[in-house]
Length: 300
Image (cartoon, rainbow, N blue to C red; front, side, top):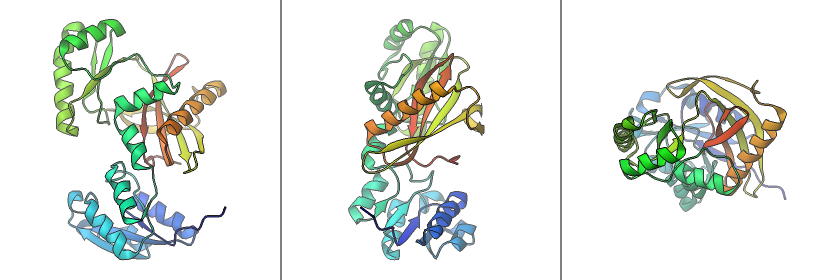
């Protein structure tokens, strides 16, 4: 069955990603709508679009992060679909929910998949249930006594991770038992401050692993494929600096297994559109980290 392309797409972003999405739309003869803040009135993405709509003040909270303003712009323009780009509202499940309520297509994963993958503990358990390797770890840790018991079972060193966040914020590596209590308190406080959720958990800490991620793409009929891996091990403060594809460390057999694991995780979540499954890789074994439920910044 042949599906009709959208006639008009609003791009709820700015900068490089907005321009790239608009360029792709133009190649498909799809009209585009830009949104802009006071600070971006003359930005390049407004000149790429067929029409531009002002959505508020210079602060992102007054414009690109204001879901009501973005949805009003889409409705006023007659857009049939919204592309979120990355950042801003792209990983908030309220966005696809608002689109569904308005009868506007969301070019990204459904809210249900975001819900399953946005919480790291939930995503980890979902992956484990579907045969994706995970490092030894715990459920949510409530107090230092439970953390100490878990650390002794897992074996030091361990890493404390916030369940609701990312970017390395709140993560603490613990090498000695006496450091566990203060590290747990510090991690929980950082998570509460940054993400509004103090939930943390423990994992076995893998020393000096490679960071390898798999690009996936899925449709609404349950078809999921992967597009190979990216080597992302060169990082500073948990932020990627340089990426390489294919990874020089990944053999064809590891690539096959890692790709199959990425597909299994996304299929289990009911994922749609483009996304990225991240793994750590050490001594010939790989372990699930998380799924970025959006278009990756460094996508090819």
